[in-house]
Length: 297
Image (tube, rainbow, N blue to C red; front, side, top):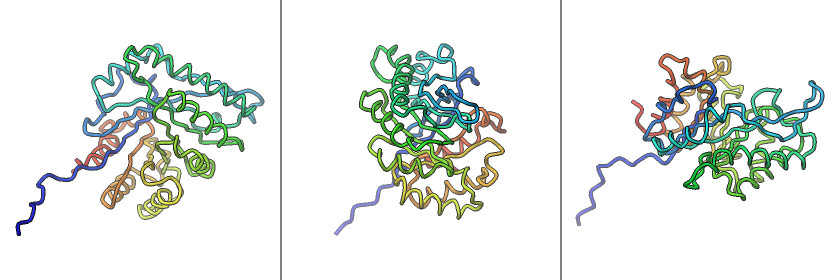
């Protein structure tokens, strides 16, 4: 009995995502040349939409009124539409919150915060999406990125906000960006809102571990017990002072081993302004996309 010959075509890698955090104010022209055409999805994550604060400097309280820190007139709907037409795998996401203690989550009043956040973010999203005559979203989603959480209302406020934006069809993509110091709060948020949260951008450079083996153990722990296989991404920082433990060689080795042993949903890099200073520029971004597309030599 004859057997069916094995296919000579290699099995394509599963769909995966690469994300680049970027401040549009720092780039003209926009660095769309870093997009690998073979990646399933390339996300530019615009930083940041930040909220206003009130109260004492030692304990600022968030109002939920968000404003973009980049100039929308300078980088607006026409710019993104043009880039998406040239790169059909590109998506754009707005990151809300901010890095550092000056941008902590600490609302004055949780219910007012939810209403203000929904209204102000809707205004930003509609400044882009309402100008699109084809009714396709110019901005695809939001990313929740708070490094400091000084309130017990994080789960309630963020959960309510992202579900409202999803239910109103204002965004397709919702992601969260946890780090080691706020893992419990993000874990609770994820467990209660798994249907709304599509991606988890864990910042592995914040981990207090030192070897590839330690990082692999941590990755599989987070994937199996906290965030699930199909949503966890590996986050890396190209800011020199932030990768003391998670250096570029460790990051590259970690990603290679995860991909060789199974499936890696995606990789994110913070941030483009520092990556552009590499020699060659955007070296990490190029290597990461090569891993994910199976084209790394």
